[in-house]
Image (cartoon, rainbow, N blue to C red; front, side, top):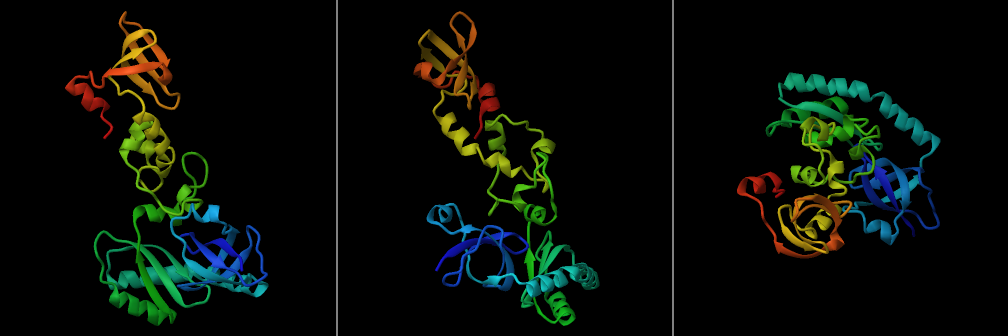
Length: 283
């Protein structure tokens, strides 16, 4: 029995799904799966090999019931055609309930077992009466799911500043924490408008190469350090992390670039003033 990694749901989750004996699927096949939420449509990405599974943080398990048929496709299109009307009804009921929440999207599962409402809210919301109204309107189980602004981008954003589809709506299975330290270490601009994504938070891509930068950075003498090189004593003025080079000032006041391999020893790790330390501190 083969297992396959599939993408499913409005938030484009990844899961490992078992197929029936002797059934094989190719990348891109549209299938009907059963998850812990009910019947859903999904897209096959690849076979769930060990090397693939090692890269997945979370792997909800379900079953592939069948490849999507013409009847399934018609039912899916029927649900999608009714989506706008359902959103309008949800908006109306939210206004009538006088609740301070922002509707982001809805997801009606393929099997009709439930309707999931995704929303933003500043505070905790008592939506019990709203759920009753929604259940009476749609005659199905209602699930309210509060999301954050970064999750909102998965529903609404299209392209990033790089010109490619936003990462959160394509290959990311989870959104890792991103800090200003990562931008500083990679010498990215610190202008918030240029390093913020469509969600208004720091771009996820600042996280991608951070571990590599940090690994090299920990092996380099810090800025201000007194070192001994093949050419004599020098002081570290700046670091070129990716190139693994140092800009140093020699004893005769020349500034030159040297490779990390040219450093024989570090005499004094910190030769900076207190103010300079604050400027270069990345912690």
